[in-house]
Length: 342
Ligand code: ADP
Ligand code: MG
Image 1 (cartoon, rainbow, N blue to C red):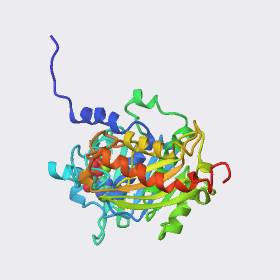
Image 2 (image 1 turned 135 degrees about the vertical axis):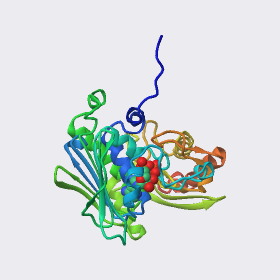
Image 3 (image 1 turned 180 degrees about the vertical axis):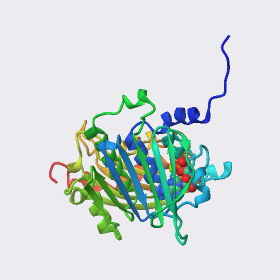
Image 4 (image 1 turned 60 degrees about the horizontal axis):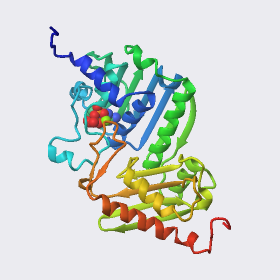
């Protein structure tokens, strides 16, 4: 007879880690999202050996009180929602209270934090899920998380990590998508002690477009149209590439729903339809679009990594996107700036 046993909390966290933490870039995603949720205006990401040796994210956000540090790394502990009702109106990037518990169960982890106005900072360390007591530390207001030796205690996972260059490329791509999500925040990325990217806070639309150009290419601004349209509680803004900015790969497509990068069937379909008669078969449009709507109108609790969302009114969202983009692209269709002549 098989014996049924309850799993230890450490093992539970390691299993959960498989859902949200599959490579260094997913650690970076969770940490930067935490910094954004903490109201940071400046976020620094330092990577060593593609993230296999070290991932460090430092912010100037609200910080965590010393007595709450152990809770921050406990499973299912969050400051972001408190009730089922909250879950229906999530405005923060996080809410599952799982990320820090997961990553600290599969790495050598440290969290140092200081709340603005407090005298000093405190630091806790977690080693493969084992928590050590908090001790005083040096840190300006804000938080730093260090994740060392990711998957050192999960050889099966470690095997799946790719070459340093590949893992860093994933982190770089991820940071681009986060930098586009929040242009008002300064981001820095370094690898093996060398600065790789600096995005200064963009204070106006021009600076915002400059950040877009850094990610999508310097010729994108001249080959794109500004979108800014609101109707029925939906607001779409950003830039869509003209047919001349289209690509052979769908690798320049950024669609944010309330600040969260999503890949959604409904969205993809509406965009494809809007471009249908201005793009050649096999070409993919480039765009950076921000859809804002009441958080109650969109369910983000569909997948642990939160890449997917579910709109309550799918038809409405689809038709709004299609109509807005179709009309914006009308000038390329009218023959004025026909794609081939542009
Ligand atoms: P979630 O983001 O879903 O709440 P996490 O495990 O990512 O879960 O974080 C747990 C909690 O730790 C957060 O709810 C937040 O209160 C706190 N926290 C984590 N990172 C930071 C940070 N950089 N600044 C301030 N608080 C943080
Ligand atoms: Mg989080």
